[in-house]
Length: 244
Ligand code: SAM
Image (tube, rainbow, N blue to C red; front, side):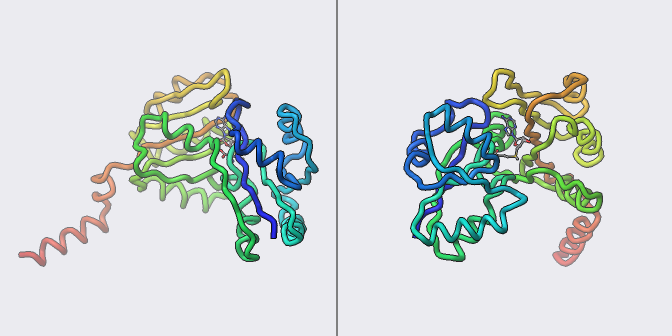
């Protein structure tokens, strides 16, 4: 069987591509890309010529089967997405699962991903964190997710579209009121910036029009905040009662 290589691509600065990703892109038989036009630009920049095929959210079922067939014939495939690490809020997860089911080797190449690039420079706790990707848009699921985040003691990393950021921040106020947040905008690009503070402070610092790509990081909840919840107070009370 061939091998599936997961190849991270730059999230802005083209110099962030790794030597190993370049070598792999040159050596594989096929490159499967989320958006072939986008990837073609990258390949042209690095002077790489390879057969390209699309693998995205809308064709992943049928194309996944075809790619598996190619891998079984012994072809090696590099999977790339528009930016960052494949399978992180990107198509890729399903293809990896298929490969594992079919005993096809998957090689994960390390490289850029917006979530970690933002987290490590945020100044928030990095020893324990949770990646939530994009918040669900459906009301019920969204509320459940926000409730979970309000109790979450680990640092929370979210992706958000610029035109939805303000609305999301206003919505988040009732869930994470006084916790610190960090907006990492346009990472690795000319206008990269980190905006830090409480939600109100950040909203004041943000201009009217928010452009570019955004990672939103939220400080974890304080321990006592969670312990003050009625069911936990009852548990504590019962435990203490039993000791006496
Ligand atoms: N697979 C990618 C990764 O590894 O980061 C994420 C893909 S997801 C479809 C795209 C989202 O990632 C954007 O909406 C934004 O939230 C975040 N993102 C990507 N590039 C970014 C950048 N340069 N600065 C800030 N956020 C970025």
